[in-house]
Image 1 (cartoon, rainbow, N blue to C red):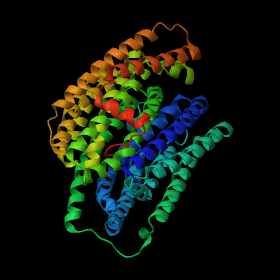
Image 2 (image 1 turned 90 degrees about the horizontal axis):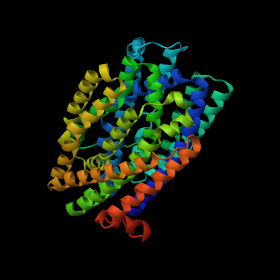
Image 3 (image 1 turned 90 degrees about the vertical axis):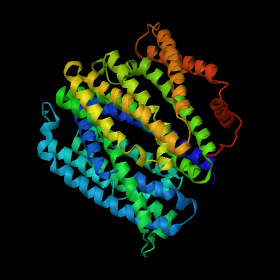
Image 4 (image 1 turned 60 degrees about the horizontal axis):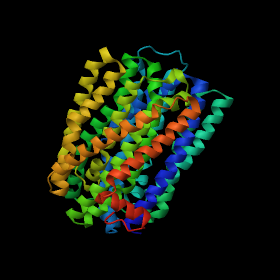
Length: 507
């Protein structure tokens, strides 16, 4: 199957699965909020963040080894694939055990992460169940990564959302009939175990050579290259975890657990969109890796510009919708007691946009294996984020913590990441990227301002008001974007792809 068909199939499954996941996730969260309340919601968000920080133990092993698989998979070099999988298996079993050990070791110090420990029974047992679920997820996931590296992410996506759907239905029933959070988490752990076993069995059927007991090993030069990439990804993993995982911890420690619950609703919606869009980019990463191994630099650069435009369109449109619809939707979904003021909403959406605009850069960086060149960037990014957040949160509260993320992204990531990609991946000047970025930003501000202004004249509240504003967000930005970009090469490229069934050139 061609790269085009593989990427298209991966994207279709990603979109379909994520839509199902978002719908059932929203429904499940309604029951969670209504039955268990704000403190359990905050606790759920806090422990999830603690475990995301513990995932630092992964140290970037996964992305580095997956990148190493692109070429042997393209060449059907089964011996090397098997050798890589053996290394991957040993690494991930070790990582799972490390997360379990470190996670259990933090149990006596839970009070450090929470301003006021809530009156929730068996809070340490609940935390240990989160640790167990996280550790278990590593024991079979290496086989999932082989399927993904072979441009067949749609298979992993299918398993993921089938189990997610079943899990949420069972969890809703448990909440309704027992109101037991412990049993709710037992279902989560069982789902993780069964899903990983099923995906492992599927991988064995797809790649029967994995069951061959004969040993396969890598040469010293291959191990050296992988180790270099792992070291680079270790820095990236550290920075990303600190940036993405500390907001809830800081809010919990210095503001309060209830505010973590409020923020988690906005984060749930933002993360749902990020997960959907992330799957779109992940769905084409393996195809871009194949492109980088087989095609010219000129073709790489053209495809990047097209994907960068697609990322802008997706995140600009979504940001406009979030600014207009965030609070009206949450008021209907969770209640007026769960709302943030508009300036906090703006900061949440701003971080969503500037982080989203990095997706095309990071996708190409991972696919082309450019981990080493910006390995120190995440350290500076996380340092700026923590310092600014700690300085500003005393006077600005949650606003200061969110501004820490904004400032660290703008001052560090914004210019370093494209510079590295253009210099090492495209051998070209990065000035074209920055000019395009600011053009896109001006268009977003103008289109967003027009859309927000029109929606402000909607005086209906409740579901009717949300429906009218949603219609405005659907029509106004898309109409203006099409009028503005209709003559660009990138727009014509996707127009031909969608409406003329043209073959995707190079992907």
